[in-house]
Length: 130
Image (tube, rainbow, N blue to C red; front, side, top):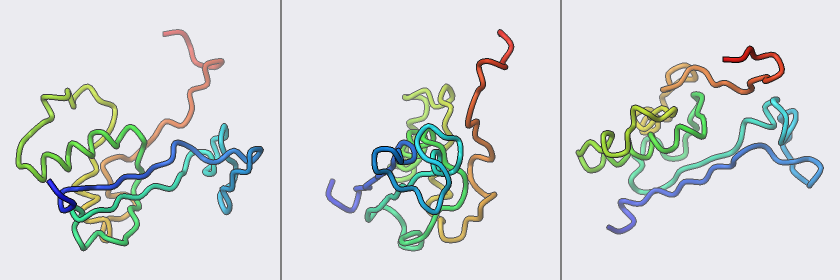
């Protein structure tokens, strides 16, 4: 397969805990908080499979952790020419495929992503029983 078909992915799960030395500045808050410091985290992808036009750019649209799996399958479908969505049951996943936008990350604006909202919190004390 070689490095030309390799993609490195790094993503954090939430903001750092200030009580344990976490540092989220300039963002407010951290782990266990709904401020940006607790929900906005660093992530990057790198590899020769990523188009040169996207290299070194920042992806601006909203991206949720649940979007990684559909996005990686979008990459696989794009690079192989096959459709693996039925194999993994993509319709049952909560995530969105951002691969086509990530390939053009340098030109994609904040509102042009595959997702336009994220639920940050469900207050179980004020949610009626379903």
